[in-house]
Image 1: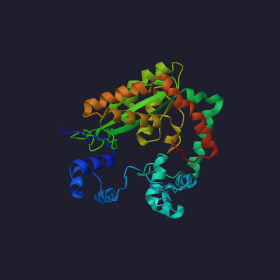
Image 2: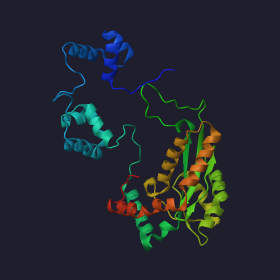
Image 3: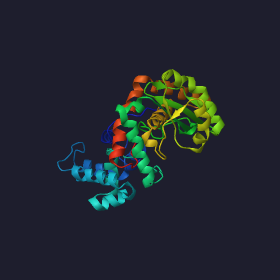
Image 4: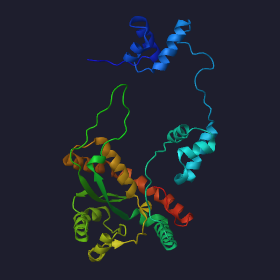
Length: 327
Protein backbone atom coordinates (compact mmCIF):
# COMPACT_ATOMS: atom_id res chain seq x y z
CA UNK A 1 0.00 0.00 0.00
CA UNK A 2 1.32 3.47 -0.88
CA UNK A 3 1.04 6.31 1.61
CA UNK A 4 1.20 9.96 0.64
CA UNK A 5 2.50 12.43 3.19
CA UNK A 6 1.87 16.15 3.22
CA UNK A 7 5.49 17.14 3.95
CA UNK A 8 6.68 20.51 2.74
CA UNK A 9 8.26 20.22 -0.71
CA UNK A 10 11.60 21.53 0.57
CA UNK A 11 11.67 18.91 3.32
CA UNK A 12 10.97 16.13 0.82
CA UNK A 13 13.65 17.52 -1.49
CA UNK A 14 16.26 17.58 1.27
CA UNK A 15 15.47 14.02 2.41
CA UNK A 16 15.89 12.63 -1.10
CA UNK A 17 18.92 14.84 -1.85
CA UNK A 18 20.75 13.71 1.28
CA UNK A 19 19.69 10.05 1.48
CA UNK A 20 18.82 8.93 -2.06
CA UNK A 21 20.45 10.91 -4.86
CA UNK A 22 21.79 14.34 -5.65
CA UNK A 23 20.67 14.15 -9.28
CA UNK A 24 17.84 16.49 -10.20
CA UNK A 25 16.21 13.92 -12.51
CA UNK A 26 16.07 11.33 -9.71
CA UNK A 27 14.62 13.84 -7.23
CA UNK A 28 11.98 14.86 -9.77
CA UNK A 29 11.04 11.21 -10.22
CA UNK A 30 10.10 10.85 -6.57
CA UNK A 31 8.44 14.26 -6.14
CA UNK A 32 6.10 16.59 -7.98
CA UNK A 33 8.60 19.44 -7.73
CA UNK A 34 9.35 21.37 -10.90
CA UNK A 35 12.75 20.38 -12.36
CA UNK A 36 13.80 23.99 -12.68
CA UNK A 37 13.10 24.53 -8.98
CA UNK A 38 15.15 21.44 -8.09
CA UNK A 39 18.16 22.75 -10.04
CA UNK A 40 17.80 26.10 -8.23
CA UNK A 41 17.76 24.44 -4.80
CA UNK A 42 20.75 22.22 -5.63
CA UNK A 43 22.71 25.27 -6.71
CA UNK A 44 21.87 27.09 -3.46
CA UNK A 45 22.94 24.10 -1.35
CA UNK A 46 26.24 23.90 -3.23
CA UNK A 47 26.74 27.58 -2.39
CA UNK A 48 25.98 26.91 1.31
CA UNK A 49 22.60 28.66 1.19
CA UNK A 50 19.93 27.37 3.61
CA UNK A 51 16.90 26.89 1.38
CA UNK A 52 14.64 26.54 4.45
CA UNK A 53 15.21 30.18 5.36
CA UNK A 54 12.85 32.65 3.71
CA UNK A 55 15.00 35.63 2.81
CA UNK A 56 13.57 39.06 3.42
CA UNK A 57 11.92 40.46 0.37
CA UNK A 58 11.33 37.08 -1.26
CA UNK A 59 7.98 35.78 -2.31
CA UNK A 60 5.23 37.40 -4.29
CA UNK A 61 3.89 40.52 -2.68
CA UNK A 62 0.27 41.55 -2.82
CA UNK A 63 0.35 44.16 -5.55
CA UNK A 64 -3.39 44.52 -6.08
CA UNK A 65 -5.04 46.78 -3.53
CA UNK A 66 -8.29 45.69 -1.92
CA UNK A 67 -10.00 48.80 -3.31
CA UNK A 68 -9.06 47.78 -6.85
CA UNK A 69 -10.40 44.27 -6.31
CA UNK A 70 -13.64 45.79 -5.04
CA UNK A 71 -13.84 47.87 -8.21
CA UNK A 72 -13.58 44.67 -10.25
CA UNK A 73 -16.46 43.17 -8.29
CA UNK A 74 -18.64 46.30 -8.57
CA UNK A 75 -17.97 46.60 -12.30
CA UNK A 76 -18.98 42.96 -12.84
CA UNK A 77 -22.17 43.37 -10.79
CA UNK A 78 -23.17 46.41 -12.84
CA UNK A 79 -22.24 45.02 -16.25
CA UNK A 80 -21.97 41.21 -16.13
CA UNK A 81 -22.51 40.78 -19.87
CA UNK A 82 -19.49 42.92 -20.81
CA UNK A 83 -17.15 42.00 -17.96
CA UNK A 84 -14.64 39.38 -19.08
CA UNK A 85 -11.57 38.71 -16.96
CA UNK A 86 -9.42 39.93 -19.85
CA UNK A 87 -11.24 43.27 -20.14
CA UNK A 88 -11.28 43.69 -16.35
CA UNK A 89 -7.55 43.01 -16.20
CA UNK A 90 -6.82 45.60 -18.87
CA UNK A 91 -9.07 48.18 -17.21
CA UNK A 92 -7.67 47.77 -13.67
CA UNK A 93 -4.04 46.93 -14.42
CA UNK A 94 -3.92 43.25 -13.47
CA UNK A 95 -3.73 39.86 -15.12
CA UNK A 96 -6.93 38.11 -16.16
CA UNK A 97 -6.10 35.39 -13.61
CA UNK A 98 -6.00 37.95 -10.79
CA UNK A 99 -9.28 39.44 -11.97
CA UNK A 100 -10.83 35.97 -11.93
CA UNK A 101 -9.45 35.32 -8.43
CA UNK A 102 -10.96 38.57 -7.15
CA UNK A 103 -14.39 37.46 -8.42
CA UNK A 104 -14.04 33.93 -7.01
CA UNK A 105 -13.21 35.39 -3.59
CA UNK A 106 -16.66 37.01 -3.67
CA UNK A 107 -18.30 33.72 -4.72
CA UNK A 108 -18.82 34.66 -8.38
CA UNK A 109 -19.12 31.59 -10.61
CA UNK A 110 -18.40 31.59 -14.32
CA UNK A 111 -21.16 29.91 -16.29
CA UNK A 112 -24.07 30.34 -18.62
CA UNK A 113 -26.51 33.13 -17.78
CA UNK A 114 -30.19 32.48 -17.19
CA UNK A 115 -32.18 33.46 -20.25
CA UNK A 116 -35.28 35.53 -19.48
CA UNK A 117 -37.93 37.22 -21.58
CA UNK A 118 -37.85 41.00 -21.81
CA UNK A 119 -40.85 42.56 -20.08
CA UNK A 120 -42.90 45.13 -21.98
CA UNK A 121 -44.43 48.17 -20.21
CA UNK A 122 -47.85 46.52 -19.86
CA UNK A 123 -46.34 43.44 -18.24
CA UNK A 124 -44.38 45.61 -15.82
CA UNK A 125 -47.54 47.50 -14.87
CA UNK A 126 -49.36 44.23 -14.18
CA UNK A 127 -46.51 43.13 -11.95
CA UNK A 128 -46.74 46.35 -9.95
CA UNK A 129 -50.54 46.03 -9.57
CA UNK A 130 -50.17 42.42 -8.48
CA UNK A 131 -47.64 43.36 -5.79
CA UNK A 132 -49.81 46.22 -4.57
CA UNK A 133 -52.83 43.93 -4.32
CA UNK A 134 -50.87 41.26 -2.45
CA UNK A 135 -49.63 43.83 0.06
CA UNK A 136 -53.08 45.25 0.80
CA UNK A 137 -54.60 44.57 4.22
CA UNK A 138 -51.17 43.90 5.76
CA UNK A 139 -50.45 41.13 3.28
CA UNK A 140 -53.57 39.09 3.92
CA UNK A 141 -53.34 37.48 0.49
CA UNK A 142 -49.69 36.52 1.04
CA UNK A 143 -50.67 34.52 4.08
CA UNK A 144 -53.74 32.94 2.50
CA UNK A 145 -52.34 31.86 -0.88
CA UNK A 146 -51.11 28.47 -2.05
CA UNK A 147 -48.32 28.93 -4.60
CA UNK A 148 -47.96 25.94 -6.94
CA UNK A 149 -45.48 25.07 -9.66
CA UNK A 150 -43.69 22.28 -11.52
CA UNK A 151 -40.00 21.39 -11.55
CA UNK A 152 -37.92 18.94 -13.59
CA UNK A 153 -34.79 17.14 -12.44
CA UNK A 154 -32.25 14.84 -14.13
CA UNK A 155 -30.60 11.98 -12.29
CA UNK A 156 -27.31 13.01 -13.94
CA UNK A 157 -27.51 16.40 -12.22
CA UNK A 158 -27.63 14.87 -8.74
CA UNK A 159 -23.96 14.88 -7.87
CA UNK A 160 -21.32 17.52 -7.15
CA UNK A 161 -19.29 18.51 -10.19
CA UNK A 162 -16.55 20.09 -8.07
CA UNK A 163 -15.09 18.63 -4.86
CA UNK A 164 -11.94 19.13 -2.79
CA UNK A 165 -9.58 16.35 -3.86
CA UNK A 166 -6.88 15.31 -1.34
CA UNK A 167 -3.20 15.36 -2.42
CA UNK A 168 -2.40 12.89 -5.22
CA UNK A 169 -5.88 11.45 -5.18
CA UNK A 170 -9.13 11.98 -7.07
CA UNK A 171 -12.45 11.64 -5.30
CA UNK A 172 -14.66 9.19 -7.19
CA UNK A 173 -18.27 10.12 -7.78
CA UNK A 174 -20.60 7.52 -9.22
CA UNK A 175 -22.74 8.63 -12.14
CA UNK A 176 -25.77 6.74 -13.48
CA UNK A 177 -25.40 4.42 -16.46
CA UNK A 178 -28.74 5.68 -17.81
CA UNK A 179 -30.12 9.13 -17.21
CA UNK A 180 -33.62 9.62 -15.85
CA UNK A 181 -35.87 12.67 -15.96
CA UNK A 182 -38.57 13.22 -13.36
CA UNK A 183 -41.05 16.06 -13.01
CA UNK A 184 -42.51 17.31 -9.74
CA UNK A 185 -45.58 19.33 -8.78
CA UNK A 186 -46.29 20.82 -5.36
CA UNK A 187 -47.87 23.74 -3.54
CA UNK A 188 -46.62 25.75 -0.59
CA UNK A 189 -48.27 28.22 1.75
CA UNK A 190 -47.59 30.00 5.03
CA UNK A 191 -49.63 27.29 6.79
CA UNK A 192 -47.79 24.35 5.22
CA UNK A 193 -47.29 22.46 1.97
CA UNK A 194 -48.81 19.70 -0.11
CA UNK A 195 -46.95 16.46 -0.56
CA UNK A 196 -44.68 16.24 -3.57
CA UNK A 197 -46.27 14.75 -6.69
CA UNK A 198 -43.74 13.06 -8.99
CA UNK A 199 -44.63 12.12 -12.57
CA UNK A 200 -42.82 11.18 -15.78
CA UNK A 201 -45.22 11.93 -18.64
CA UNK A 202 -45.50 15.33 -20.24
CA UNK A 203 -47.93 17.65 -18.50
CA UNK A 204 -51.24 18.24 -20.26
CA UNK A 205 -54.37 19.99 -19.01
CA UNK A 206 -56.16 16.79 -18.03
CA UNK A 207 -53.06 15.43 -16.26
CA UNK A 208 -52.58 18.71 -14.43
CA UNK A 209 -56.22 18.71 -13.36
CA UNK A 210 -55.92 15.18 -11.95
CA UNK A 211 -52.80 16.16 -9.98
CA UNK A 212 -54.52 19.19 -8.46
CA UNK A 213 -57.65 17.18 -7.63
CA UNK A 214 -55.52 14.52 -5.92
CA UNK A 215 -53.97 17.12 -3.63
CA UNK A 216 -56.99 19.40 -3.15
CA UNK A 217 -57.84 17.86 0.22
CA UNK A 218 -54.36 18.80 1.51
CA UNK A 219 -54.89 22.44 0.58
CA UNK A 220 -58.41 22.40 2.03
CA UNK A 221 -57.01 21.10 5.32
CA UNK A 222 -54.43 23.89 5.40
CA UNK A 223 -57.13 26.53 4.81
CA UNK A 224 -60.60 25.31 5.90
CA UNK A 225 -62.02 28.80 5.28
CA UNK A 226 -60.66 29.07 1.75
CA UNK A 227 -57.50 30.22 -0.01
CA UNK A 228 -56.22 31.73 -3.24
CA UNK A 229 -54.67 29.29 -5.70
CA UNK A 230 -51.59 30.61 -7.50
CA UNK A 231 -50.02 29.18 -10.64
CA UNK A 232 -48.30 30.76 -13.61
CA UNK A 233 -49.88 31.45 -17.00
CA UNK A 234 -48.67 28.42 -18.92
CA UNK A 235 -51.15 27.14 -21.51
CA UNK A 236 -51.63 23.93 -19.50
CA UNK A 237 -52.67 25.86 -16.39
CA UNK A 238 -54.95 28.24 -18.24
CA UNK A 239 -56.68 25.34 -20.03
CA UNK A 240 -57.54 23.73 -16.67
CA UNK A 241 -58.89 26.85 -14.95
CA UNK A 242 -62.55 26.53 -16.01
CA UNK A 243 -62.78 23.03 -14.54
CA UNK A 244 -60.96 24.19 -11.42
CA UNK A 245 -63.37 27.09 -10.94
CA UNK A 246 -66.27 24.64 -11.04
CA UNK A 247 -64.53 22.91 -8.13
CA UNK A 248 -64.57 26.21 -6.19
CA UNK A 249 -60.92 27.14 -6.74
CA UNK A 250 -60.32 30.89 -6.40
CA UNK A 251 -57.52 32.51 -8.36
CA UNK A 252 -55.44 35.63 -7.98
CA UNK A 253 -54.31 36.58 -11.48
CA UNK A 254 -50.57 36.02 -11.60
CA UNK A 255 -48.49 38.28 -13.88
CA UNK A 256 -46.77 36.79 -16.92
CA UNK A 257 -43.05 35.93 -16.77
CA UNK A 258 -42.84 36.48 -13.01
CA UNK A 259 -41.18 33.54 -11.26
CA UNK A 260 -39.37 36.09 -9.07
CA UNK A 261 -42.71 36.91 -7.42
CA UNK A 262 -43.41 33.33 -6.34
CA UNK A 263 -41.74 31.88 -3.22
CA UNK A 264 -41.76 28.32 -4.54
CA UNK A 265 -38.98 29.02 -7.07
CA UNK A 266 -36.37 29.39 -4.32
CA UNK A 267 -37.68 26.23 -2.68
CA UNK A 268 -37.15 24.26 -5.88
CA UNK A 269 -33.53 25.41 -5.91
CA UNK A 270 -33.06 24.32 -2.29
CA UNK A 271 -34.59 20.93 -3.11
CA UNK A 272 -32.19 20.32 -6.00
CA UNK A 273 -29.19 21.17 -3.81
CA UNK A 274 -30.40 18.81 -1.07
CA UNK A 275 -30.99 15.97 -3.53
CA UNK A 276 -27.54 16.43 -5.10
CA UNK A 277 -25.98 15.89 -1.66
CA UNK A 278 -27.72 12.49 -1.46
CA UNK A 279 -26.17 11.53 -4.83
CA UNK A 280 -28.96 9.09 -5.83
CA UNK A 281 -27.88 6.34 -8.23
CA UNK A 282 -31.20 5.23 -9.73
CA UNK A 283 -34.83 6.25 -10.10
CA UNK A 284 -35.90 4.65 -6.81
CA UNK A 285 -33.27 6.48 -4.77
CA UNK A 286 -33.97 9.72 -6.65
CA UNK A 287 -37.67 9.53 -5.81
CA UNK A 288 -36.88 8.69 -2.19
CA UNK A 289 -34.50 11.64 -1.91
CA UNK A 290 -37.01 14.04 -3.46
CA UNK A 291 -39.77 13.01 -1.06
CA UNK A 292 -37.55 12.99 2.04
CA UNK A 293 -35.96 16.36 1.33
CA UNK A 294 -39.29 17.93 0.40
CA UNK A 295 -40.76 16.92 3.75
CA UNK A 296 -37.73 18.35 5.53
CA UNK A 297 -37.68 21.64 3.61
CA UNK A 298 -41.43 22.26 3.94
CA UNK A 299 -41.76 22.06 7.69
CA UNK A 300 -44.04 24.94 8.61
CA UNK A 301 -41.47 26.92 10.59
CA UNK A 302 -39.03 26.72 7.66
CA UNK A 303 -41.66 27.85 5.15
CA UNK A 304 -42.36 31.11 7.01
CA UNK A 305 -39.11 32.70 5.83
CA UNK A 306 -40.10 32.19 2.17
CA UNK A 307 -43.30 34.18 2.76
CA UNK A 308 -42.07 36.88 5.13
CA UNK A 309 -39.50 37.97 2.54
CA UNK A 310 -42.28 38.59 0.00
CA UNK A 311 -43.11 41.90 1.67
CA UNK A 312 -39.66 43.26 0.81
CA UNK A 313 -39.69 41.67 -2.63
CA UNK A 314 -43.09 43.06 -3.60
CA UNK A 315 -42.20 46.53 -2.28
CA UNK A 316 -38.96 46.41 -4.28
CA UNK A 317 -40.87 45.47 -7.43
CA UNK A 318 -43.19 48.45 -6.90
CA UNK A 319 -40.28 50.83 -6.27
CA UNK A 320 -38.48 49.61 -9.39
CA UNK A 321 -41.64 49.96 -11.48
CA UNK A 322 -42.07 46.28 -12.25
CA UNK A 323 -38.62 45.28 -13.44
CA UNK A 324 -37.60 41.67 -12.81
CA UNK A 325 -35.88 41.01 -9.47
CA UNK A 326 -33.11 38.66 -8.45
CA UNK A 327 -34.32 35.61 -6.57
